[in-house]
Amino acid sequence: MINKVVASADAAIAGIEDGMTLMVGGFGLCGIPENSIAALVRKGVKNLTCISNNAGVDDFGLGLLLQNRQIKKMVSSYVGENAEFERQMLSGELEVELIPQGTLATRCLASGYGMPAIFTPAGVGTEVAGGKEVRNFNGTDYLMEYAFDSHFAIVKAWKGDTSGNLVFRATSRNFNPLMAMAGKITIAEVEELVEPGQLDPDGIHTPGIFVHRIFQGSAYEKRIEQRTVRKRN
Image 1: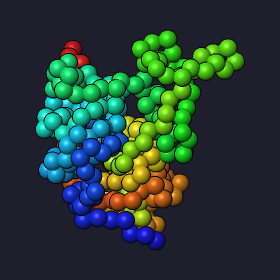
Image 2: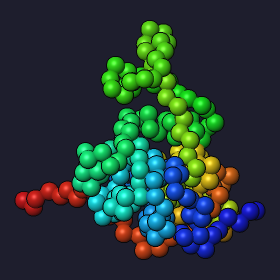
Image 3: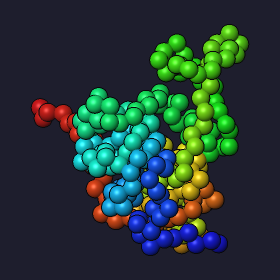
């Protein structure tokens, strides 16, 4: 078995340089690779293109990279919780490509499957369709969308073993498994790192063949993006 463990987040992000394209897993603030993002902040790489469902919040997640002006372009579906993101977008400092959420997920999936493109009805007849090829199948128009091409994918799992097999929990199983398949180099940080054979084979969500580097993270904050509670009666 190949041991893919690296010593730290800083070691895991070796090779990420200015101008690269990164896929960053998570949904909202759930299942985001907190340790790896912090390492990118410390490294100070700039002009990044980040493909992620959302852009974190002002002082957490990808919001930390935005604060440092390390991101040149965001490719996202939902960006409504980050005031700094909004400011940079409206001022023209940040390039933004907004994508329907299902299209974002499927373009990740296509990349992992080795497919060059997909056809989707989402966005037909809207601004999303600008400059894109449209084909008609059985009387319905579909947009052609290219699979993503990223240098690295950075994901966060609940458990993983030293060979890179990953298990995700709940909402973190949304974009993380898709992105783990899609990166030329996939970095996984996990809450618990175990030896091969300690994970239930039937419970593995991402096989280790897709993962190139893995490390055990620490001090996860696991923030709640929007805390909503009912008033007491």
